[in-house]
Length: 155
Image 1 (cartoon, rainbow, N blue to C red):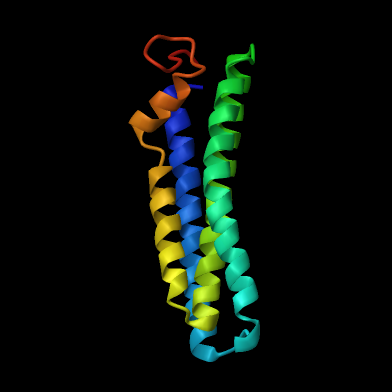
Image 2: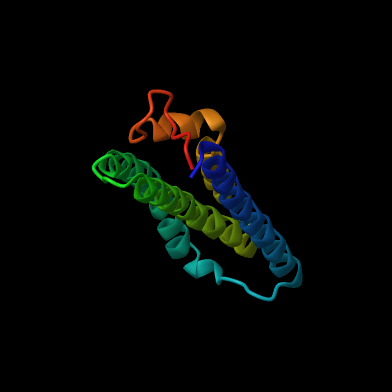
């Protein structure tokens, strides 16, 4: 797979993640306006604490996990297997961040807790830092790519 194809696929996956997030913002707003789902105020601290803990624990663990997986990809012998694993691990990295973001968004709309806005901000920043730019993909693929340029040029 050519470097540009890998970058396009990762951009497509990231675009889907953004679309899913925007869809959940819309759903959360509709739930908020209609009052269809509500969390009892006495029970609010428990899901709030769970979401905060998930976000605070998942971000560093997810990024560390991705870095270690990236180093292990270099041990694979087949280049196509390396690329497939890289794309899969990139998807998992974005998915874990997306779970925390969507949880915080939905809880914000259900309980109107401004604390969740901080978590949403943190998750959005982390998600943007994981955005697949050409430079980022090139530097991540340099760990396992056979060429000195950091990417594989043959199909």
